[in-house]
Image (cartoon, rainbow, N blue to C red; front, side, top):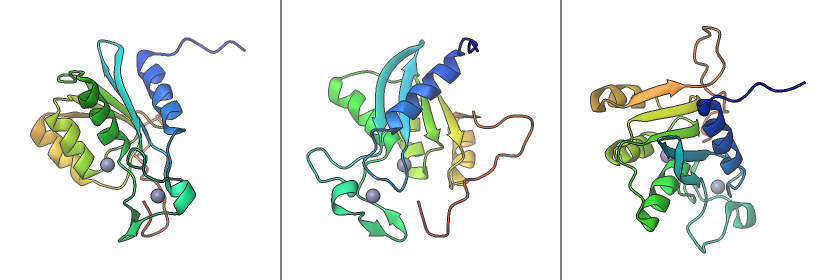
Length: 158
Ligand SMILES: [Zn+2]
Ligand SMILES: [Zn+2]
């Protein structure tokens, strides 16, 4: 069977999912792709500091039920742009899961206007902040008018 041609949104979200496979923390694999004018400006996945050991090798660094060893995918995508001097003002970001509040604030202040996400992850507060900041949140998960299903995670995991 021939797959129908992917829309731009599907194309970038699939790339974000591919980027996520590079994650170094197996608690969650997240990928992010920053795009403007259908061009990829930067990518990021949740991973350890450069040159620092990976969770996969030395275990997680847990704090309040979350692993804090990694830099989040969105933050890494923004950092990669900064490192290379790539302007991302007015761009869009595709993420495999919706940003945490810290990452949301970061991408909003980098001038990112739209956040496409595949699954909703945990923090409902981003909805209110997005409204206030004029940032669009676009859900790209399962369709058919179904309610956004939050990820089902055991208590205290991230
Ligand atoms: Zn970890
Ligand atoms: Zn985050």
